[in-house]
Amino acid sequence: MPVADASLRFPRPSLMGVVNVTPDSFSDGGRFTDVALAVARVRELVADGATIVDLGGESTRPGSAPVGADEELRRVVPVLEALGGSAPLSIDTSKAAVARAALDHGAELVNDVTALRGDPQLVEVVAESGCLVCLMHMQGTPQTMQLAPRYDDVVSEVAAFLEQRIAFCVANGIPEERIVLDPGVGFGKAHEHNLALVRGLATIVALGRPVLVGLSRKSLLGRLLGEGAPIRGSDAASVGAAAFALQQGATLFRVHDVAFHRDALAIAAALADG
Ligand code: HH2
Image 1 (cartoon, rainbow, N blue to C red):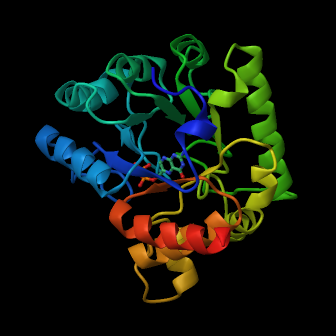
Image 2 (image 1 turned 60 degrees about the vertical axis):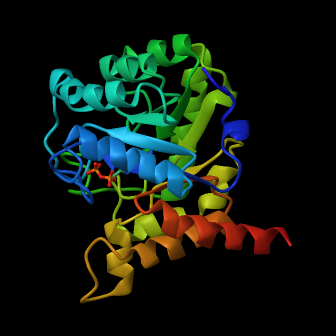
């Protein structure tokens, strides 16, 4: 296992490229279900400047159908085998069996949109392997989360949730150093909740762990661009949002177009440092 300290592994800003080997993902569903195409895409994202590539075998878009562990394994294992540990990988899963398979093939981070609530066995897999873990906030499940999201104060509720999940990890043998936090843009949040969270990112950053944001091609961007804009927002819109999130203290950016974000965030970071 390489560096088990998320702050050292991910200097600000770092990019997490996305490759979904699913038929139904929000942005790239169906594009990388062929193993050779998925492998080529992983390599391309690394060459473009991704610090890590997030491989996903189950869509979590609103209303998506859940898949069983067997199907998720059937989708991701051939890609993991073909890569043979030759690329820095994160596995986007809530399932212990899928995480274990990915870690056995050299993955270094488990990205769990349920923050280790979905599968009671996943916490042990993460603790024992020594891998990094991303804990994301979600209200509800992907099937129901956008029906009626409710908060009194979304920023403080998300921060309190993430603090509790850090405590859960530490109590179960996962040191804080291995944890990355994510407010979960679009996961059980209405438009105004997403806006409040991105604007209030500093409160999440203040919890003391590196913060990951997934803004790339999210519907929040299309909504901000107004009528006529593609529902997912353009890659330019994604970059604009990422540059703002960097200013608020975000560290790791989960993005579909790595090359596009690399130079933009490098400049934003260099100007901020000056
Ligand atoms: N967003 C998606 C999936 N996984 N993980 C984290 N930590 N943060 C996110 O914001 C996040 C995530 C959704 O995006 P995408 O991978 O494009 O779609 P799908 O879930 O349909 O595969």
